[in-house]
Length: 158
Picture 1 (cartoon, rainbow, N blue to C red):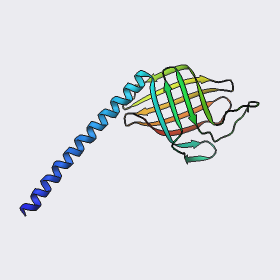
Picture 2: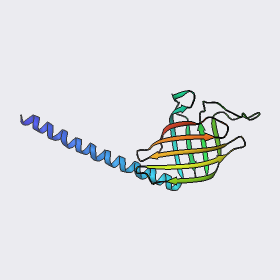
Picture 3: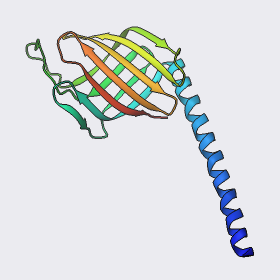
Picture 4: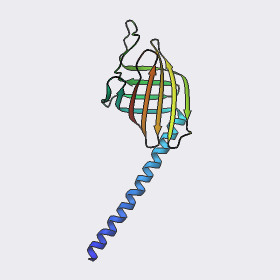
C-alpha cells in the first residue's frame, strides 16, 4: 500500500510540474504574440485554406504570410474564380511582396489581436484580415477586387 501511495505522490508532483510548464508556455506565447504585433514583425505558417467555391483543403507546409515592418510578403495558394484576369501576369496564387498601404490593429477583444492591412499590386488591391490568438493560432481572410475571397488557418512562428 505504501508503494502505491508513493507512486501516486510522485505522479501528482509530475502533474503539477506539467501544469506549471503549460502555464509558462502559454504566458511565453502570449508575450510573443503581443510583441510580434507591436513590432509589426510576424510570420504565420499556413496549414489549411478554405475557398469560397471549393471548400476546405490542407496545404503543404511551405506557404506563409509574413509582415516585416511596412512590407507584406504573401506566399499563399489561391483556389477560386478570378473575375478580371490580368494580361500576361506571371503571378500564381497570392504570391506578392509589396509595401503595406494601410495597417490597423484592434486589441479590444480578449485573447485576440485583429489586424487589417491593405496592399496594392499592379494587378489588384488586397485586404488581409488577420486574427492572431494568444495561443499562436492565426486565421487569415483575403479579399480582393477581382478574385473570390479565401481564408487560411495557420500558426504564428515564434
